[in-house]
Structure formats: C-alpha cells, structure tokens
Length: 229
Image 1 (cartoon, helix red, strand yellow):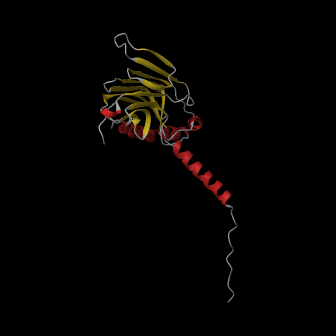
Image 2 (tube, one colour):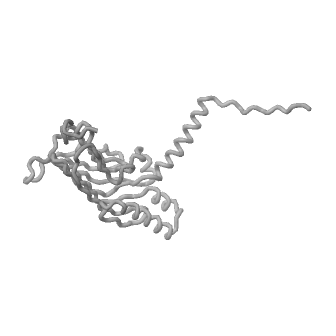
Image 3 (cartoon, one colour):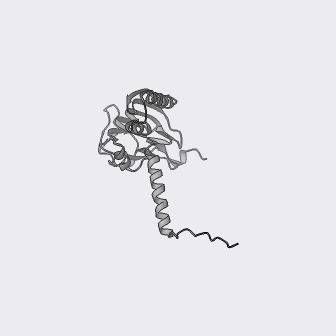
C-alpha cells in the first residue's frame, strides 16, 4: 500500500511570526487596559504632610469605572444590569471606610469623597484608590525620602486609550508640607497659612490626560532613624 505523504505547512519566517504574535498580544493587552481601571475627573485632591510624619489625604470628585462605562457606551447592558453593576462597584469601594460618599451619576461614573489620615513611622505607603489601582500615592522609601505622585491607573499608561474611550481627566492637586523638598514639578509654589509659616503649598492643574504627572519628593526621615528590617 502506497504511503500518503502529509503536506508540510507553508514556511513562515521568524520575523513574520513575531510580528503576528506581537499584533495579537497588543490587541489583547490593549483591550484589557481599556476595561480594567478607574478614571478620575473633576476632582480636587489635597495631601498634607508634616515633619512629624502626620499626614492627611482627601479626594473630592468623580471616578469612572472604565469596564462599565465601555459596556454602557456599546449598549451591552439594560437598566437592571447597569444598576446591579453599579451596586457591585459601590459595595467594593465601601470596603475602604475612607470613602465617605459614593453616589452613582450614570455611565459608570460615581461622585466620591475620600478622606484618610495617619502617621508615617517608617517605610510605608498610602494609596488612593487602592494599591493595585493607585491614582494618588504617598510612599516613604528606605532612604527616608517621601515620594508623592499622581497618575492614571498603572493599567492605563497610554493616554490614547483614554481618548479612544471618550473619557477625559481634569482636576487640581495640592500638597501642603513643611518638609525639605528635594524635587517637584508643581505649577505653582506659595507660602502656607500665616499660622503655619514653615509650610509651603504646591499646586498642580491637570487639564488633560497628557498633562505631565505631578511629582514631589521630600526628606521626611533621617535614614538612620528608620527601623532596620
């Protein structure tokens, strides 16, 4: 019996295969980015930080959960499904008692008020909304410096992805501190209240997703004073 030859698949160059794989990964990763983040807007945020380590962080504005916004925009959900998804998001945010107000505004957007305070005693970090979805971060490093920054959700670094969803982000950030500041990119620096002459006020205006991300680095502790791990 004559053997039947199995035709070999057409040769594909390694370069062509890599390009196809990269295109697939980019498409899948881009879809994930557009559907897994909070987008801040119309906000006023303030961070107060003293040499003693005492801090306070507040955020008043809106947060849009991109997956819900996207599904509503594409007409994938009815009114009861939207209400159920909104309830789930509210319950998730309420797990953090620092959320003092969460009001649904429609289209996956929520009006929120967030307030937290405490005292840094060593290397640690405070984040809003949460560590894996940080829009505001205050972190004390092992060298005793404190780094404050505001950014988009780390899952959504490319501003074109926000723009493709039709979302925008605008707001104001203020840092009030009496720390020695080593580096910052504030738009404006002014003196603090007369009753606190050692404090300075650092202000940023965020006018679009392409505004440079706010950053401030100050010296909070002497490294020798930090607990040794």
